[in-house]
Length: 323
Image 1 (cartoon, rainbow, N blue to C red):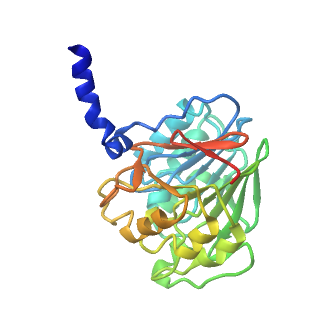
Image 2 (spheres, rainbow, N blue to C red; image 1 turned 135 degrees about the horizontal axis):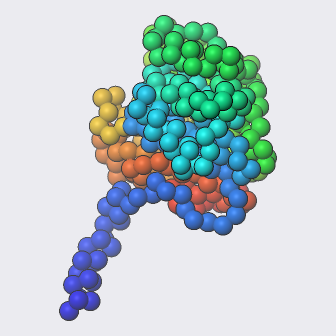
């Protein structure tokens, strides 16, 4: 009788793949053998934060979420889950609070024992911002502030690198756009290309692909070519991830960072439509966001990307590096 009851309970789940897909906790790294490059899309709600750890232990952070509480959580994750309280590189992608509001708290905690714990400094796009969080950021980083250069390469060791492929609406080919004044900050975002052996991941922060934003995506796409993983620009807004961008990059997996029931409507249906139509592409999200989620894997936590020799995993799903 016990076996019959168990079977009755399990059978409905076997026919509900989407239910299993959205409630399974995939926020922890898979247990696979061998050294790996870890890229963690940290679940910070409606915001952005990524952490990288190379096989030899060098680390980097890109943005830090919305506020000090989130920044504290990010630092504790760095210390307790990634096993370090130092950073080799930090990046402030652009001057919006959902990206930088928690970053200075992370950096303040990292540098508390010694400012040398932020080894090579924090790289931003230069220029300035009138926002109050920017003043706190400047006070925290002080002489550790660096202005990133287009094309600059950052060495994480073991063959892992980050390269600045766009900043201030200019791309690595030399092309540029003139963004509308009211939406310029997103277009000025730092874009970073991760390389490790044959693996490639594009992190474009909040760059857009046209409409009310300047079309940085279309002039950047031919500079990038195919990637394995795409960090979806601007939290999956309607004006990001245009068709040319997706046709050129041809990701195997795309990751959206957004907050549940956020007021911005992210990810937009139009963006998800384009991502879902991209051949061979699977979509992951940190949280539910807004609207229908039948085409996405909702991790409800941090999305771990782990890169090994000839394969990589996203939220535990395995992919070949070569195609």
